[in-house]
Image (cartoon, rainbow, N blue to C red; front, top):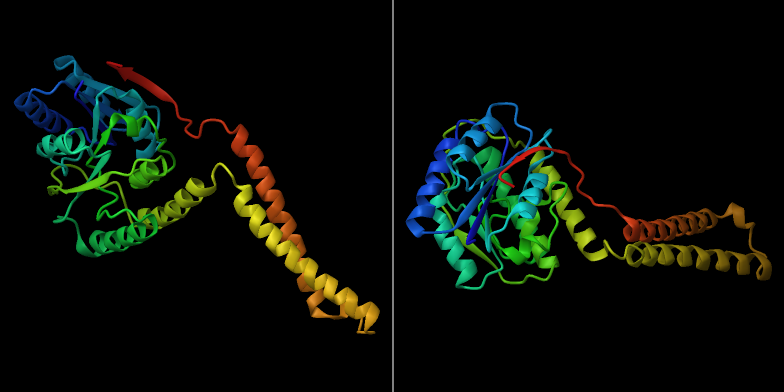
Amino acid sequence: MNLSIVIPLLNEDESLPELTAWIEKVMMANAYSYEVIFVDDGSTDNSWKVIEELRAKNPQIKGIKFQRNYGKSAALNEGFKASQGDVIITMDADMQDSPDEIPSLLKMIVEDGFDLVSGWKKKRYDNTLTKNIPSKLFNAAARSMSKIKLHDFNCGLKAYSKKVVKSIEVYGEMHRYVPVLAKWAGFRKIGEKVVEHRARKFGVTKFGWSRFVNGFLDLMTIFFVGKFGKRPMHFFGLWGSFSFFIGLGIFTYLSISKFFFDAIGMTQRPLFYFALMMMVIGTQLFLAGFIGELISRNSAERNSYLIEEKVGL
């Protein structure tokens, strides 16, 4: 199979028929073998009914329905697990992503050898104050910290080689950082392509200002987990030992001053309480690293969500 197109959605029943027809047109024009996997993230409208109707007309249409809303990352992760194509394309269901971009994205993976290609919506139709400016700041921070030269980490239109999606786990709200997850997994050839951004035709946006705060926190998480997720003692143990030995050194100095130089009582000096605090903090950090090691070696799956129904899978 050439292509798996994974489309997470939430309350997009109006756009699904037109989007599907557009995808089918592109697939037929290029003679691709393909599947379209819709992941219904707990929609409360008729989205699932529409997916079933589309499936009845076209066996290449497949669907996964969550029992409730788990978020875009869970939807993508489940879609990745179900995908069978050599190249996986992700796109949003609101028709702001153009299926006409698919052939060129596929070419960059198959012929140019990229592991992952991210879309860049260079010209946007969003409100400048509430989306463009915060998005530019967020992308600049992500670009600086990850050292991945992408302009639009959050673009839903991306292409992946099959090996990439089978090697990563997307959880929490980490869908913004799939390129970072891929890089941490050892995939270095990450490219970018300017893609069309279309004005929203149906429905309303599902994202607000909170995504930028959450995005920054997730960026901190991704770097900590990527670097220390399998060895938390290397972080907590290092700083715990550093803190403890600073406190121990100050305590030793105070003890020598007390017994050999007739200094004032140890408990009457502020340094004593500082040393005590540093030793306590150091011990707590070291224990946190030890407990983290136990958890990381015995952790269960991070994704835990209930699928209510599937079709075609």
